[in-house]
Image (cartoon, rainbow, N blue to C red; front, top):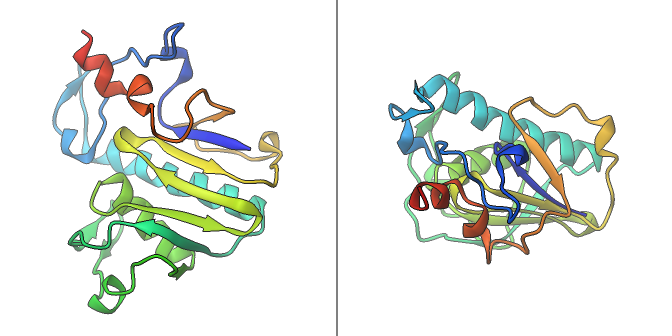
Length: 186
């Protein structure tokens, strides 16, 4: 099972799979206008929370309580950061241990999802049942597992679109499906 798990509504893709709607693609877009509306911090945090909630639902459905970092950019400086309800201070002790082989509990996974989405840190997680969680640019996230999940039984946040057997193979061709490409092609 491979899921493309994003904020992007598949109804906004053309026949070739290109995403054609101009949408925000990073935290840096806060304050910019999309479809005549200013993209706000509160909307950003709502969507970021939805990504974390989606991963939590998928992990809980498989009874997975931890993931292991299998690959990461451990050279990147990790900042302290905030969400709509919390301020995270990343302890130096944790920063030094964010490397391949690190076993992460849910609290750490939640934190690293947010840092991945903000492009402050990059990593790939792996877990039992061949489960993996990987992030691409522009808010693309792949979740895969050798163990199937009955997705119809899960109540995903309304901001999220879960696409099974998506046409992309990893992120090698993610540009084809990216909102950023829609901007370049206008």
